[in-house]
Image 1: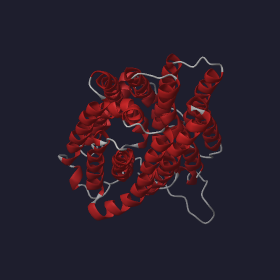
Image 2: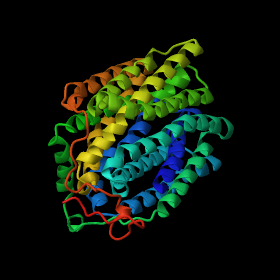
Image 3: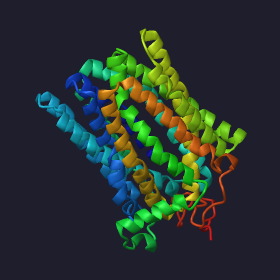
Image 4: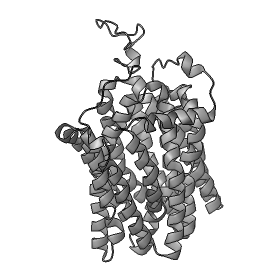
Length: 427
């Protein structure tokens, strides 16, 4: 529950930063498309850099401590933006540094977070746990962008970011209050090289035909998604002429769709199986991205197209992500979750940087609309990798790995509730 509370608070703040940095660049500094491409690349690039070194570190360390440290560091980094704006010295160079630092800290936090959940709840509850986390994430997607737009309108973008700095501080407090016993086995305590850690993470995915396509899609999708990260804000504001508050409302609709996706996901899994829910959820979400570059004047039509993309994209993406995360957390041994997460981050990090840079260049030399259309087509083609894989034939999560917990970690080692007998680890 405390992990859930921490995630809820920081999710709202993360939406403010996501829109706030780009809006600060466009509205305060009047950034060019190529500058927004660099900004997006710096925010996405740490997925590669941090992933190279973080996997083994997370597996051999206390995940909760890593998450608290990341939250406190993000608070300090974001606080520099409103301070610089107040002193009238805010520049693109500073936003570049902030984007890079926030990207690195967020990747480290996410790797630890993903490896931490299976330590708190039993394997059979992972789908429910991921659904609940996704629900509050969707609620943040509903209110966060709209709140960001309103704050930017009232306070300007740099000072709106100050609100997010406070949310990370609250998140750290909730994480600090968690009581749990996160055991580090002797294997976790052994030393290893960066290369061996990375190799172990990639081997987990590439050696299993069920999660191998998830890594392949994770490696290609950011190439095209990076273009959207670089150009979506500038396309909506400059090409379509939307006001920040209206854009915030449009993005907030995606949050409503995400919430619908959390409701749809278990229903689709029961009806069609976990594999088809993942594959076709990603495919429909990717196809909806084509609506973005097709948006045009008048304003009502532009809003309608962007809203359609948010509705179908966010709902089906979340419907596929929940079983995807649960499948990976169930198949991958707990002792390798950090290294597997780092490998996934590396697989998507480099393509994300390339995509963001290409998006910025394409937006300058071609047009944001044409660049987004090409990127949307690439996202659809990437989703087809899952269609032609063993995933569509998977109906249920396979049997547990040897080290998968049968009971939550907090209910082991003599810390059982009254009247509940101790349950030994799975042999």
